[in-house]
Length: 527
Image (tube, helix red, strand yellow):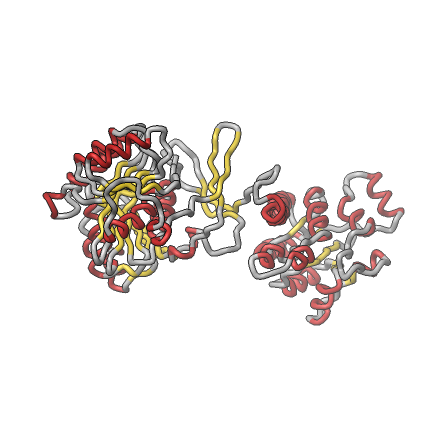
């Protein structure tokens, strides 16, 4: 019986010594690159160096180690092909049965401060070739790229003397996924440097986290994946205290909730329903922010999701337990708040710092036969920028109204177009009072925002009317009718991009109604 051969060449040495001891005890001969061979020898595991087999030293500071016919002939030979077997015998090539390889840590290197030369030196060449060759020849060769698979592979060898075809097939798929991820990471790195991230090809890569019960609706299959980013922005890295697996719709809503409250440094709360904010507030503390956000549209909050950028208190937990909602995500929780919330059946409770979300990701939108990519909309106005913008009306905003404008301009970009958001500010808080979202005409969005405000009586001022509030529009007003409706609701200030061919008419309408208006020149469409 021919001795089986295992080639080991690993950068990540985790678990490799124990694995190598196991296969040596099972009768495998081990061949290895110099660094791995040295580690194995130090731990009393005999391994023959590849340079002894190729009769050629490692050269170019280790850039060339395994790229040799004596290795790749042994990897690619089909043991059921007599011509292949004859050829490798003729050239004294050792057939290889198992390859254990992992690659230079390119992804980890580029996640830290580094030079381009550092990145280049951590692009693996030989290792990728070994993996691809072994995976191509999976009917004859097993390939292991993940230390987490050592136990499975070791058990197969211990029980059967070799790794079964069924397992080799699964390892083959994992191997191609591994090198694809590696190559995509390298491509995306250089694409960002040389092509502004939008090159002739665009690749995304994901690792499956779990299969979902269904997608947006029960008849749609779905799974959730983590992209290959090394940074800490992955939503599902949250601490999950309680609740079933998150649904497709839960994840979308939670992500939006965290993005909205992440806009603010002040203690803030938002309520999300069907990927639309229905109440957002900042306050002197989280209790105040919660009360104001919830009151904005308590009816729509039914079955929704709550997001907080701070520590949820016992008071908030007790208030939330009076209503039905699906999920809560917050930067932290008081111990008693967790205990209270856990009493609520099927509630998903997550802890995630809103500041941990990435600001450098792409927005990807699918359409039939293709997809579009764009930068995330992270633009917003600072207080100083806002005060330097042109006031195009006779009336000028007050200091408190400028405060509300800074707040509401951050909120409106998270609301579906056509989007109208009404907000107010006082000494301690900023809060929405009405939101009109996703309408096909802007005037209808204005009407709905005012209707919502009056329905929910966010403030006890003027019977809950919107008198004195600031209105933010995600895009320009095409006609003056939206301003006329705003005037009926007592709106005091309008903040909008401007740019309509009827801007003059819109400005005249504001002057007629004694409304102040500021042009931002920044559109925030969200389709």
